[in-house]
Amino acid sequence: MSRLAGRRALVTGASSGIGEAYARALHARGCALVLVARREERLRALASELGGDVQVVAADLAAPEGPQRVYEGVRARGLAVDVLVNNAGLGHTGRFEQEPLAAIQNILDVNARAAMMMTRLFLPDMVARRQGVVVNVVSTSAFQPVPFLAVYGASKAFLLSLTEALATELKDTGVIVQALCPGLTATEFQGVAGTDRVPFNRTGSMTPAAVAAASIRGIERGSLRVVPGLSNRVLSALVPLTPGWLVRRIGAKLFQPSPQGH
Image 1 (cartoon, one colour):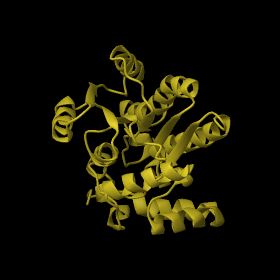
Image 2 (cartoon, helix red, strand yellow):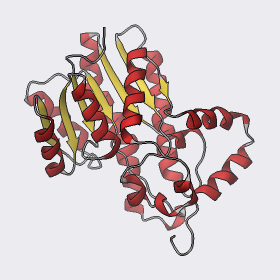
Image 3 (cartoon, helix red, strand yellow):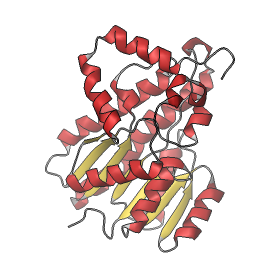
Image 4 (cartoon, one colour):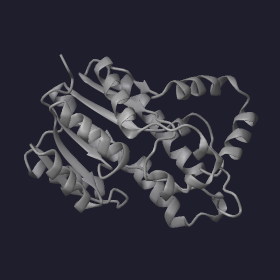
């Protein structure tokens, strides 16, 4: 029996990219939805297009109170979340010492703190019902240090470690967790993070729909770590076998912005 049929799923960062694709995929599988993002107008347009039981919660997860407000808003509507997809994420390419302090804080707040808090808030209800799914959208950047994308990579390494630790804690509770680790994906992230101006952007990318589909297949199998795409899986397998200095050097060449920004 499917883990998703007839469930209610909450997706953060659902206004575009992987989050939007995930919402569409879950809706197609008969899930009721709660869509969360800052851009309310995009969420409402998506909800109107999808139809059915689709709720919208506009929230800034970078704000300290953001996750709590989402949780309380969902509870106030009398909704039970069976599937939590922590997809919202931020990144920026550049030299660490030149990054604005506020930008660094926002990356950590969204990628690490908000995902952790959303999981902590919704998880007890899942455990009490002895069923649930938590998907944390990590990244292949979590597998090694990423010069010039240092804070983003570190935040994703935190999220990967947290997710895999929870998998053991939650054994025999009826709740499964997944670390979804996509590589380059064709979304708005590249333009916002500046990875559209580094050599990494010239490597092959996947579509958000393909990433979401891989994750959902992983849910049905109960897979903990899901790395979509054969090339990404091969690279992730090679990283632990490669000397650290070489991994860091390759990462620097892939992510160092050109002086002209092209």
